Amino acid sequence: MATGAPARGGYLDILRAPHAARLLAGTLVGRLPNGVGPIALTLYVRDQGGSYTLAGGLIAAYGVATAIGQPLLGRAVDLKGQPRVQLPAAVLSALGMALLALAGIGHLGLAYAAVVLAGLFTPPLEGGLRALWPSVLGREDRVHRAYAMDAVAQEVMFTVGPLLLTLLVSLWSPAAALLAVNVLGVLGALAVVLSAPSRAWRSAPREAHWLGALRSPGLLALLGSFFFVGLALGSITVAAVAYADDRGTPSIYGWLMAALGLGALLGGVTYGAREWSGAPERRLRVLVLLLAVCYLPLVLTPGPVAMALLAALAGVFLAPVLACAFIVVDRHAPRGTVTEAFSWLVTTFGVGSALGSAVAGPAVELAGTVAGFAVAGAGGLVALLVLLATGRVLHVSAAPVTPAAEARHAVGTPAPAAVHTEKNTH
Image (cartoon, rainbow, N blue to C red):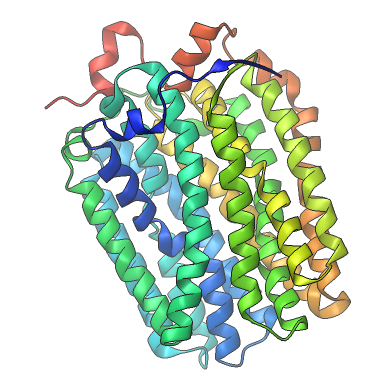
């Protein structure tokens, strides 16, 4: 993995483009309910007197439902456009969480049905934004840089989101906080779908195939690895709550999650400031290795200050891993499946995170907080092993890499004769 010159322009150059700031901000706010969902559910269940196992179960149900819904909604967006899918989905998802907040956990069947509804209709705003970047930014190098900015912006959300949630809980209650973040989510989705690029965007023509984006072997290999990255991240969510409870200070949890996001933010800014040479598949293996190594020290569970530093270290390589993965998705996704392909990436994270939460809950109750963080370390190592085992598949099914070719594939740009099908046509 080698570095070239510093990236031309910068994030401000991207944000000055018409509609770019609005789309990015709307997407981040629209994704807030999903981004803080596991945290909000854990705090809500604990406030209601529920166990870690119940919290982990509800988070798992929410994650699995999200995982099912994302590629289905992503395919619907590719076929029907963004406004007709994103906004109704956001409203239905918010209604599901509102049902949980108002009904409580006394009736487990209703609680699980509410989180399944919320997860199933989580709008695919993340994949939708990456599909919009080519029509908004035009030049391929700007779109490539936007992927890195996208990963950085996610970490801003994951840094600010837990702090915002903690503030809302302290001012009101976990139930009120759950309602508030979902109202914000609907407003964010509304800001995106009412924009001109979202209303005008249409996917490129696609080959009719029931597997859709999943007919790409390289994409399947990538998704297999990111399942375990999600598992690691999901287990940290539950283990960090247990760590805060051990110290008798619930607010520590929000600070640990903020530190994790801050580390990823710093890593993403550093990564996005350079132009990287070489095959992104090879670079991704190195980044996942570093991510796994940084997860392992969490099992030391030192005092709060040192633990926050370890959490920040654990996050450093998360945003670079995501930014690099976005490029790999573009290189391997079949034509006309851009939103669906990115939604599958969200799906693997969702399923992995759900399993990580479900495993970490009983692990904490049976063997303590250290066991919860051990799940994270194991998940990172298995993610690396998957990439190593499928390296030949990733490289064989990808186009040869030159600096120009990587930039072209990074934005998923169609052949010249069909560029207009992916671009804004107003």
